[in-house]
Amino acid sequence: MAQAEHFDALIVGSGTGGTQLALALGGAGKRVAVVERRWIGGSCPNVNCLPSKNEIFTAKIIETIRRYAGQFGSVAAPFSVDMVEVRARKRVMVEELSAAILEAYKANDVTLVSGDGRFVEPRTVEVVLNGGDTRMLTAGQIYLNLGTRASIPPLPGLAASGALTNIEALELDRVPAHLLVLGGGYVALELAQAFSRFGSRVTIIERQQMIASREDLDIGTEILRFLTEEGIDIVTSAEALRVDGRSGQEIRLHLRTASGTRDITASDILVATGRKPNTTGIGLEIADVALDTRGYIKVGDRLETSAPGIWALGECAGSPQFTHVSYDDCRVLQSAMAGGQRTTANRLVPYSMFTDPPLARVGLSEGQARQAGIGHRVAKLPMKAVLRTRTTGETTGFMKAVIDAGSDRILGFAMIGAEASEIMPIVQTAMLAGMPYTGLRDAIFAHPTLAEGLIGLFSSVPAID
Image (cartoon, rainbow, N blue to C red; front, side, top):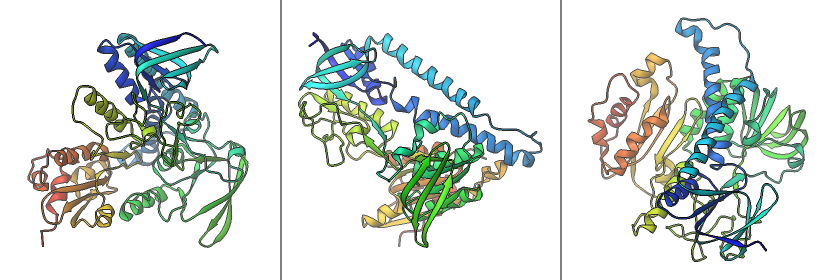
């Protein structure tokens, strides 16, 4: 066995939370090592959040040229989509981000160990280096930032089909002739729309009765409407039975629907049906780190695991699967180190889906308030009532607020519309400050802006009975 190297802190996984923690500890003079087997900085800057938004934005530009140029007094020359160039633009961004993270590690004296880590003793991690050698690492404090990966459902023929996940889809150098998308959640809908705009025929297969099933029905219906208007076929209440063929050549998907069985033939298949934690095969049982029934690490509200001196953060700890939550997990850990009181309890977590138009939401939905038995009032405003959208032509969608029935407290906010993810933080800030909805109703927002729509929205809140 190799001689163990001792560090003050050992972080397994270099995702956003782990990286920020490493930089903070390293910058404070601690001896810190980060174990990362593949993607420096984790999945977000390499294969998930930022690369997908990069290609989604490219798809929006393409759609703008294709559909709207004539409406704005110009005529676009015939053009075609070059996926090699689309991919190249994304790769440049990823390379720049990776270089910046490596430079930050260097500036803060963080040791990066590239390889697969596995517990061999309760406080010792053996790393099989990418070059083939091994290193043995120990630390007084260990932080697990293991992340998640796309889950491939046990559908007969699917694993053998070479199905795409988001990772492979974002590396395509061609436009699939006909892309089947399994799943109706955020990743599925974002990529389905992007590839439709690149020129693919796209069919979405969703097991639930509505896409975006975690949202209120009016939101799911609006998303269904604008995606269908763009030419995307959406099959809901559909159970996938079997897959035949090879993705990239010919795929046949056998389905059971309310109207009976049917087959769909396509060129490619993309799986976006959920994620699972990267907690198997790394010896967590040796470290006495307990998992829940889904395989996520059990943690307290300060992210402590069942093993003394070991914490977990980010998606592997069951935190909401957003990069901004992983970053906040880092702040929870820093607070604990400093004797502060910050915890993961009762966090107001916002999120966005980057379709076009995007969806943004924070707080309770109407359905969640009803399910919890919370008395509430609802206000809605169509985006076409916001004058800024008349200048841009982006009138799709609506704003929606959920207000407490007996007070002026804002319980939740949702928006489908242009720049929704930039408008939502205004309402989130008001909620964090405990501001009543009347504060936004009576505010002065610049004209003509999308934020101005908040005045109209909150002016329509029903009076207390």
